[in-house]
Amino acid sequence: MLDNNQLLRFTTAGSVDDGKSTLIGRLLYDSKSIFEDQLQAIENTSKRKGHDGVDLALFTDGLRDEREQGITIDVAYRYFTTPKRKFIIADTPGHIQYTRNMVTGASTANAAIILVDARHGVIEQTKRHSFIASLLQIPHVIVCINKMDLVDYAEEAYNKVIDQFEEFSSKMLVKDVRFIPISALNGDNVVNRSENMEWYQGAPLLHTLETMHISSDINKVDTRFPVQTVLRPQSDEYRDYRGYAGRVASGIVRVGDEVTALPSGFTSKIKTIDTFDNSLEEAYAPMSVSITLEDDIDIGRGDMIVRTKNQPETSQDIEVMLCWLHNNPAKPRAKYTIKHTSNDQKAMIKEVIYKYDINTLDRNREDKELKMNDISKVKIRTTKPVMVDPYRENRTTGSIILIDDTTNETVAAGMIV
Image 1 (cartoon, rainbow, N blue to C red):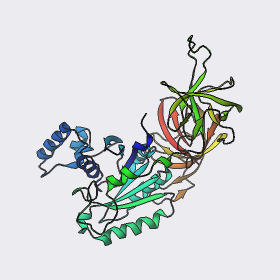
Image 2 (image 1 turned 45 degrees about the vertical axis):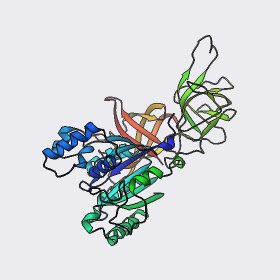
Image 3 (image 1 turned 30 degrees about the vertical axis):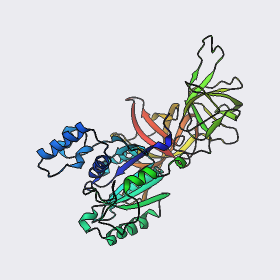
Image 4 (image 1 turned 120 degrees about the vertical axis):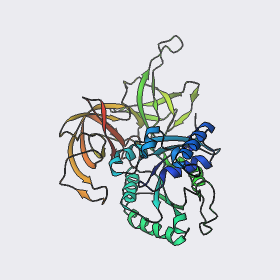
């Protein structure tokens, strides 16, 4: 199984011309993470377009017709590996109409790279992207101050952006913010250290990503095991086997632990922890295992096994920061299917408490209509109790999605507050 320390997911966000595609291209190009045939195709396209060198932006603009139009749409996922770590990049567009794409791409990220043009400093889009990163509780934010070559690699320009960013980010919940002066076009401080900025003593971007400590990003305290399915093999070898299969959402499960099954509230002890290959003494997030208990308890899909002395809140009324993803606005008091871990049931949006103005971060308590890209605080009522933790403590048990029953489309994603 892949050790979670090896895999880092990061999202990139920036305004339209901040050089996001060039930065990702530079990362892939300089870290030798591109196949020969891809490189050849991009070199040919660059020549055809009359560029002197390789147009690095072409690495991320995956679809040819999208490349021809010169726009990047939706969320593109890129994968690359260095000897130290595996990476998944979620590349999301910068325009305001793509707020939902950024929420989608950033929801599982360990880190967010926010690009700022050294000439323009912190602008509205920088604030919006940083706000979404803090809302999604992305543990690490790297502010890449790009186009340093256009301000003569001046330290003053770098410090000015830091001052601007820190002034407004003090209101947000971001634990770890780092600043790196770069030129994506020329490769300064992306993979290799820049000779043009001797005054910068920090590490280049790739080294920062490779060495970032992410194992503490997972909640190891609150044991949560949502049951996905019940295993009853009925074979001669496993005649009486009854295992509860799923993925450990957080915390650690150990043989002998006293646990409670929710929502029933029955308690037992963990008898065995099994994988396809062998049995374990303990398992931790995000491992997929099958758990057997000492006692025969009625447990099904959607139930949750937790430590008896450390339980989530069980409620039918939850408050959620909701990002509306669909073209059609929310229907008042309409029923949706809510998906929370392995639990699916019916729910309705009972009340819209306020909407965020994404540009000013003001709260609007008058406008109650949820339209595409709106981020709002709402009250949701479910038909049966759900076992929830606040999103800031547990990104797995603290997140939900809503599905429209008539179209089967995902219409909203939410973080429980």
